[in-house]
Image (cartoon, rainbow, N blue to C red; front, side):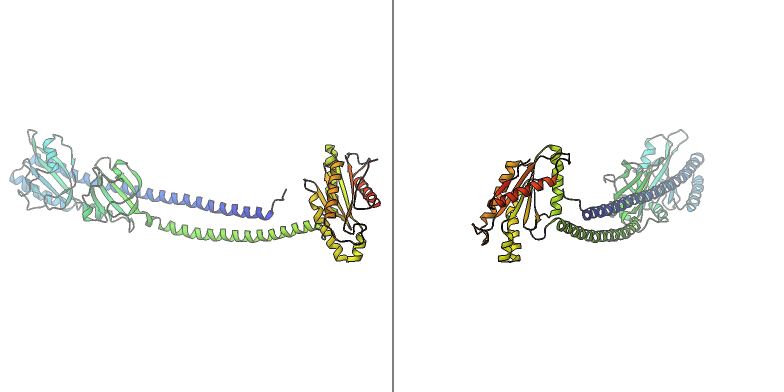
Length: 491
């Protein structure tokens, strides 16, 4: 099993830390943005409620005047002296109330009887106006909040609030009507700071845009009831919408009046309202990005150094377990593997086989061809027999000098002898010239094979006994003429 890389773990840790930092930062910014939007919406909604209350106060003041005028007309009649006194009263009252453009009294035939704006008596007829028709057709003495109309006395846009006048017999006697200009609301709304992109709008419940700040003449009287964002259908609350007047995306608070059929939408431009938060967000994002980049860079540098260290340690570990000449496992690695294989076989009651391979007449080979050639000879033989260990746990190692060893766990005596013969044949097939190795005059090896079923009782025999047996078999192979395999016989 390949050991887990600390460098890879460090990189994963750095990635997790960076993701956590970015995640926490994003979560905090998202929450703060939500809180900022909630704060803006709350301010807009509170402003809308205040302005709706002001509009209600305006209409109540106008209605109080209407009640007073109705009482004066019904009590004093419409004789010339009474009308003259009424003229003076209307002018004086309206002059002190800039929120009301005019107060007018219409007779039962629709013609103007008197007004706070002199010079129109008998010249204006309101018979076709909604407020006049309402009071003429309904016996109710309650006020009537009419739609936005062009003022019969001047042509400007006005809102109308009116009451019915009854004759002594209870029949219809005319209408008292107050005209309230949309510009008054626009001027009043202008006292409140809603930014360069903000607006405050007074809306009739039927969808008519009554007044607006900033004041746009062409927008007054517009029907927005078919707009998707017509708030009267959705009720009071905070909304984000695209203005049908100027196309600006705004965040607004809408509140409808419970008494009069109007509502106020106080809103600010979304981009402008969130500009400060966006600047802080960009600053925080830059700082956090630099922090994450620094952590990631330092982490990568450190992990690279750690990886180089691991590779160096792994290389040293390989060198410590590898024979420098042949590239096979060294004696130390072989001893560890043999001990482990012996203990496992003892627990499982399975055999362990060992082959000792010795180059025939190797000293003479060195004497004839030189030590460099001798080293190359050992490397060639190691390469030829390295494939003998194919199964897990099997190992080919350099035991010492010209001797090589092959560890074969879970292999019986017959199997070990077959592997040994295969090794001998492969080396012979190399046809490496060796003049001192008579009679073949080619490079050959002798192999000693030993097999045992280990016991956990080391007092009987241990791994070193297996080596001793294989060595004895190798000696017998040499004595019998070399270039052969000998198998040890257990006592």
